[in-house]
Image (cartoon, rainbow, N blue to C red):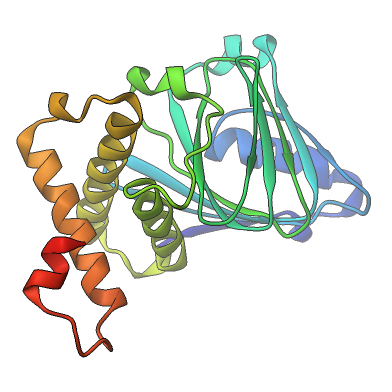
Amino acid sequence: MAIRLRAEGEPARTRTEYWHHAVGTALVPYQLSAVGAALRSEIRLSQLGALTVLDFHMSALRAVRRSGLIGKSDMGLVKVDSGIRGRGRCEQEGRQNLLAPGEFQLADLSRPSHVAIDESQGIALLPVRERGLRELAAVRFAADGPYASLVASLGREVTRRLDAYDSVRGARVGAAFLDMLALAVAARLDRVADLPPESRQQAILSRAQAFIEGHLADPGLAPATVAAA
């Protein structure tokens, strides 16, 4: 079951302070500031095996993670931002990326970053302990990429069904996400051959299953069609 945290449950005068604490506890500390009206935000949080998954629903927000905060809270994590609703902008390592629905990006929580989230933005944050991902911080993985699109779609599905996973199913979903993420990153770095065979096989199986589910109404769906895709 997912844990829910809501900023609206706090009085307006203490809401930002409470939300600093909530985000810092659920993910890592950021310096937060609402844009325009009073802060409105909700987090749903669940543990899926090795992944901590957070689904954010929020009003326009700015978040900054500077060296001072990092020094007090560095756990060596990389997070995956999966665009679900609205848009968000991330700046890190001299790069800037605008995240749209259907895309994902990586952010190194051990390095300074600036994040701007538009009204009604929803982002799934999946922290993973993998330092090899950091050279791709704030790099856009577009929705038209063969593996990147599956990472984003799986991220959307995971956040939509956070309340449905028990510990066993959650661990399996988390492992499947990591396999797909590994393949997407390896393809971007041209290192697919470095992946363990079982990871490549699981990722290909996930792609095949996604293709089948998306074409169940197609009378031309056949093994040859799936293999070609």
